[in-house]
Every structure is written in C-alpha cells, then in structure tokens.
Length: 278
Image (cartoon, rainbow, N blue to C red; front, side, top):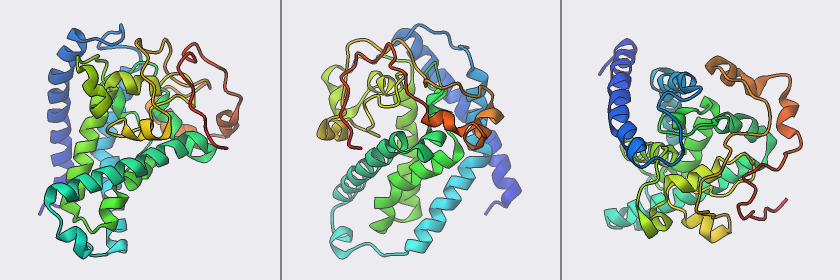
C-alpha cells in the first residue's frame, strides 16, 4: 500500500489527469449545447479551480476518512433479507434511500441558518459550469456525503461499494452543474438535467429542485420546477467573499448575521414557489 506521501503524489497527478479529461469532455459540450451565454474563462473560474484542487489534494481525503470512521462505528452487517436480494435490488434500494436522505438533508441546508452558512458557499457561484460544481465548503461536503451514504452504511455496504456510490454521485453532480442544455427531451424528468439544477441556483434561498440524482423526490414533495428558460440571475442575495481562502473562512466570520438577513425577491422569482413548513 502507498504511504501518506505516496497517496498525496498519486492524488496530485490524478487531479491533473481528471482536470484535463473533464475539460476535453465538457468544454466542447458546453459550446455546442450552451445553456447560458458565458465563456470558458468566465469570472471567478480561478476560484473554482482552487476548489477543484483543494478537493483532490486535501479535503477528499478528509471526507473519505470521516466516512470510513462512521462506517466503522456503525459496524452492522447487512440484514439477511438485504444480503439475499439480487444485486440490482440492493443498488436500487441504496440509491433510492440515498436520494431521500440527500433530498431532506439538502432542504435542511437551505432552511436552517447554521447549515446554510456553509452551504451558501456553493451557491455563491454566479456562473455555473462543470468547474463550478466543485465550489463546496469542505464541512458542507462532508455533511452531504454522510447524508447521501448513510443508508448504504446502515445496510452494511462495504467501503468499496460506498466508494463506487460516492464516485457515481460526484460525476452526476458535475453533469447537472454544467452549462449545457442537453437534448434529452422528456427523459430529463426521469434522470434529471442541468437546466433543472440551474433553477436551484437561482438567486433565491428557497429556489426549487433539491433532488440529488433524479427529480422524483422533488415531484413527490412538491418542489419540482422546470421553466422553459434558465433563470436570469444566479448566486445569493448577500454579499460574499470571492477568493478561495475567503470562502473557506467566510462561514466563520463575525458577520454571520448576513445569513439571516431578509431575502430580497430576485428576478428569477417567477418560478413556481414550493411551500415550506416552518
């Protein structure tokens, strides 16, 4: 096995390879099926690039360590009925329950101020694309990973299976943040699509579409919306830090009352508003 130094060097090389693969895959797609008019090197792209490398070089290891420790603490074997189920049933159940946990955990991030102050870092992006998907506070990322993978851990999935799920969901997160309007037709209501998630990033803390993979959870709980055109503005209604280090420290700042300030209706408020329980 690689030592700590070897693992870091592997992650260092891997990050550049993955970055090039993503760039070669997404930049042409975002040019051909562009959702919003913006260039590849749009404002704050360097900040999102720093988040990308931060995940691969530091915080990805931290999230994996936390997941492993939680899995070890739970330490429960798979229930007999689950272990005897066909593999496709196990995968479908884990993904479905993970979607439910992710949905309610995501709504909690938008509802509770203590969670929103960290999740808001992700929503400070005013230009979405494949690179902006990586703008995520590490504590917010660990919270999300725990919520999404809790059913797998409770059902006794091994760490190798959980790693596969983490990778799969991470790839999907990049796709739904990309600046693309893929010609998927009605399939977007089954599998989700970038234009749905772009509406979640409208400049409104209570914008719709909280689903993690497919929009079925939003359809079930009344928070699904799919207007024909993308929102005119993205981001949040409060002033925010703009640098990488600034965004990492921002949730801990003395001006944390900004996260509880009155939310001004945005130009994107024409989207059907879901009703939330207080």
